[in-house]
Length: 482
Image (cartoon, rainbow, N blue to C red; front, side, top):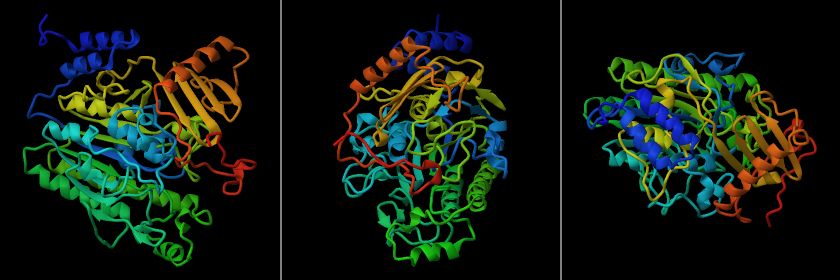
């Protein structure tokens, strides 16, 4: 049978069979490339929007009740909403490593940082990345916003596949001063710059400028729009006074901001981001680019202190579902089903094989992706295949493995077994009722862990203590790696 004669139904069936049989990801990627409706010169533009520390239910199409996010809701109504989306980690640098490489972050030293702080480690410039693979396919690549994968001179967006960068390199900055601890952190390429304004607005403006410029060229664009919202400090678009208070406090890490913030301020931060996303969607419409532009919206990890993670428990830095589950939406009108939900389990590192396949390419065979392409599940969202995914987090010696509907979780010496489909709050510990299932998942975790880099005693890790969050009373950061 010729390639042209292979139907999408046949390809989907082969893909599901390949996954079920545990066949190599490379075979899956090859089949998905044949399924994608993208010949050279017809590649989709790609806009990848990532929020920072946004909880699973922090947008109204995932359940937020006290404010509305109409632009993000529009993406869901015009695309596919994944209801079982995971982050590669419960903290930012590690997830961003998984996203940009398409692999478990634990394969690289930078991926062991939870998050990257002051060590001189970063994403190696010679490692293939999502932007470098797309650039090889003819894309012009942009990063607007957060990098957090290593400092100059060895590491940076321009060293790792992006043609253009405007944003900040560290883990977070003040929304008005664009710095942290008295040091500015705003860059245009590899050069520090200064700007006036609320950072959420400034980042959206840069994305609009790039879209406008590329609309008159035949070259497809890949724009990573990595907002800092709604990451601390807790500042809405009219909170210059709060920014000034923090800046003048004399405390180097005042932006951690345990003495500020509220649900009202958090709502202002999220809805301002949503407003700017709406401006961008309108611009794609007005330029006639919406039909063949992939727009993705997601978060780098689970929510922080003001987030809504319902129906899950846990938050950022924790391997409970609330620390890992994130909203994940993809809109591509030319190819994707409209207003559909998918129960396919997916994770941040799936975006690389998905987007590279959509562009007609494949991951670098020297660095095969640990993720899968989601293309087969976009046209027919009712289809799904079982996955096995693993995580570890150094603080509190956390381990987790999800296989099918089951999840093994370890926190210090406490062992849990949950059916996270029936029990998303992770309340019913089934380890004694189903000891064989627990043993099965523990062994899968051990096999996975043996293929990753060992934990690094010198790497940064972080977790909330009882002195910081009242609902964490009795908790204190600790791990056994010395």
